Amino acid sequence: MASISGICSSSPTLNHHNHSTPKRRRTPLLPSFPKPLPPRSLAREAPTQLSAITKPLHTNLESDPRALWLRYVDWLYQHKELGLYLDVSRVGFSDDFIRQMEPRFEAALRAMEELENGAIANPDERRMVGHYWLRDSTRSPTSFLKSQIDNTLDAICTFANDVVTGKIKPPSSPEGRFTQILSVGIGGSALGPQFVAEALAPDNPPLKIRFIDNTDPAGIDHQIAQLGPELASTLVIVISKSGGTPETRNGLLEVQKAFREAGLNFPKQGVAITQENSLLDNTARIEGWLARFPMFDWVGGRTSEMSAVGLLPAALQSIDIKEMLAGAALMDEANRNTVIRNNPAALLALCWYWATDGVGSKDMVILPYKDSLLLFSRYLQQLVMESLGKEFDLDGNRVNQGISVYGNKGSTDQHAYIQQLREGVHNFFVTFIEVLRDRPPGHDWELEPGVTCGDYLFGMLQGTRSALYANNRESITVTVQEVTPRSVGALIALYERAVGIYASLVNINAYHQPGVEAGKKAAGEVLALQKRVLAVLNEASCKEPVEPLTLEEVADRCHAPEDIEMIYKIIAHMAANDRALIAEGNCGSPRSIKVFLGECNVDELYA
Ligand SMILES: O=P(O)(O)OC[C@H]1O[C@H](O)[C@H](O)[C@@H](O)[C@@H]1O
Image (cartoon, protein in one colour):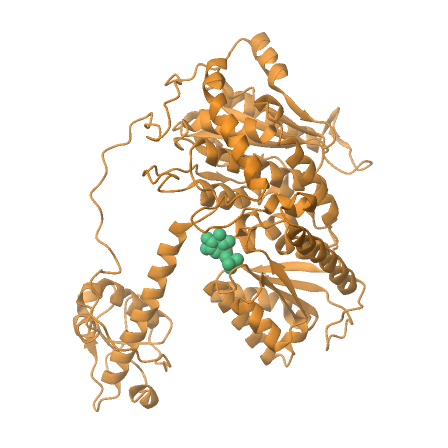
């Protein structure tokens, strides 16, 4: 047989996929490209259902230093107990704009109040939205929900304490106690714990945390390899609200395989965080895992950091979770204020509306000047974009809402993309996150007369803020004293509420994610098609002599000629992983290839 060339690889392999009955498909898996849209006008139209708000097309930002200082002082929001400030002076909204927005804010704040009182705030899924109750259970609408929250928090504290003190031990570790956490989860079941670990974990936590948040086999292998012999003292926390997310299931199966190969007893080291009676919950119960913690129907994944999802991993790293909850509760209280300028979340939402024309016309760039807040922008990306990125509003009008979020950290980004922010396309507004305390007390020193390392960081932030403003680029600054469990809890609560208020302002449901399903469904169809391709190839490879097939022949025999491009991609992927052989041609010229399987699977043939 001819050898392989191009991007395909050569070694034969066995395949064990089930045979499924081929069905004729109507919709191709790779849709043809839609016609290009006409260029978007600079000022997009406001959503049809809401009365238009007048805003000058080009904002004339205040340039007189004295007037700017007065604007700064006038609008500065301070939360004394949290030591948190919000400066919106470098966003150019006018008094007239605020007057026009006031009725919408009144409605939005009323909607938030109803949500907190237990209204069905997620109408599509007929669900309450209760993440605010997690940090003040007395606000839950029923005593049953209150006891669920309180009992879960108690259970988390007791379990974490028992693990950290070694009362709960891994069965076969020479260390005699758990030393590592391997967290398996994706999206809202990973981003909060990742952000909080990066922000708050001490340098030497009692348990170090690692994450599997993808179905990338090489990434999973890397995490397991890094654990090495410490797998024996690893607590595996599998997190999934639905309990059926494929990536998380795959991560679990891979980890369980590693445990088997190391001769370890997985259930004695496994913890599940999921909704009661989900697939994951049932598996954990039947297999007798070490512990199970609930996720609640009324807490969405992207707002679950203050549930067991975020609190258990944090507590195991000795992060003070009660302080996180206290910070969030204080912020929630402030965000119930009905006067816009005294309500930090409302102020943020106001700035977002102004900066993006209420239609997402500008991106939100998040720039924390603190390494430990590196993952804040990634965390906010899901919170903001999955909540606000919606095709339809609550009245069924097509609005294609959303605000794009990206960012990394300063001053690092000043040596990368800030060039474009200062001088390039004007399609963003910035949020600086400033941390006043540079280092723990007693560690500072002057690396040149009168100047510390932290002074440079401060100077970089202030310099960038001024330079951007001088070029008409708007910015918000959120300032905290220190990165502590309390301030991180407050930051999370601030953005959760700002998203909720903004969603009301633009009349969308912030608490569902219908768009995510389309990709998941399409992925399922690709895998189903792959099984059919394998069955067809297996049949041809079992012939004497073996019958290599062209792509057209595979597509015909799969009864899926319209899916030939996807079939090509499936075959190229299998060939790159030594699971199919290219007999002729190469993957660079798809029409030339003839493909077969290295071995015939007779069982599969008669399955
Ligand atoms: O926690 P899970 O049910 O596994 O869900 C994990 C993630 O999956 C989905 O893709 C949703 O869009 C996310 O909102 C969710 O956080």
